[in-house]
Length: 208
Image (cartoon, rainbow, N blue to C red; front, side, top):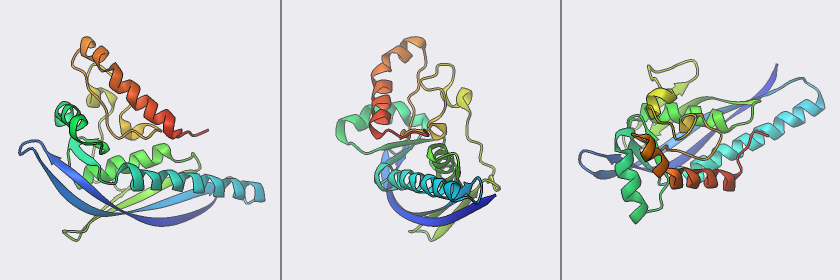
């Protein structure tokens, strides 16, 4: 197999929400990721196709860091209803829902999301998250699980699904999910789900 790789570092400022104190704290990160693209054969056509796949995947990854995650609000799943209700009235920041607001879960979900939006020939092999204030680096790779278990759909959503898979497994621009406690509540969430779908269509992220 023929492949080529590169490493890129993006910087983001994130707002971390603490549901107990109701506070937002600002965190500055430098996020490095390695992107590897395979060419099916050494032929000129396959090399050109691999370069195109690499460029598209790189552009999607950088759009996520430069646009979606910049000044985003990271919050735990337990605070989803509270954050969705309150944020819509006072800000337009992107929302990022995590199983828990920790750097390890940030690495794991971003690694999965990046591999969900990249082209099939391209793979994000690892992520390094540098907490610039504390001068601490967190490493995440496909070989090193860091004892992190990302929930599957049943555990993440509960009994009533609003989406078929968690946001980090979907090939779209979403970074959070909505949750329902009953079928009636699931119906009431239709407007939010439609908004998510419209945002995805507007960005036109596709594997095709």
